[in-house]
Image (cartoon, rainbow, N blue to C red):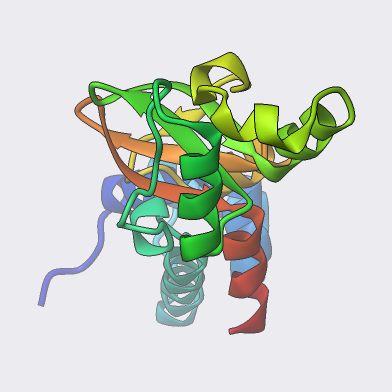
Amino acid sequence: MILPTAQSIKQQRIELGLTQSGLAKRAGVSQPLIARIESGDVDPRLSTLRKIFDAFDQSEKEKICVRNIMHTLVVFVSSDESVDHAVSIMQEHGYSQVPVIDNGVPVGSISEDTFVKSMAEKKTAVISKMKVGDMMGESFPAVSPEADIGIVSTLLERYPAVLVLEKGVAIGFITKHDIIKLLHG
């Protein structure tokens, strides 16, 4: 059996993104004790180590990776397609917004809000024949598949969706609805 070292405890704490205070609070011990354990000044009791490793386990379970909740099938339209086609795609898949991707590169987004705003200015028949590129809004922000859900949650406060890119290629899509589903189970 290999016992943890002061360095391995510190390293695991840092990998989990915990501060000494955060770990101390989760483990039910003081921050100075965590600092002394990590510096090697004190040999902790077995019960204290158990509390620390229980806190590590709890923290690992709470960390949610983008890859685990994204939609892996990326539904998108290109800027040269008609708005009518974009509406069909969105209705077929039940999305209220989709990214606009040309030759694998995200160039914008289109949403139900975009269509509704346009209908106040133009006739429906005119809008249906327009190109997506003439109506699209800014591109959704992008994150890596290994990003923490906290980053995505912050982005979703401002944007309706977030793209997941791997090596420059869109592989996923996350919406506010996906985050809310996490609360239920």
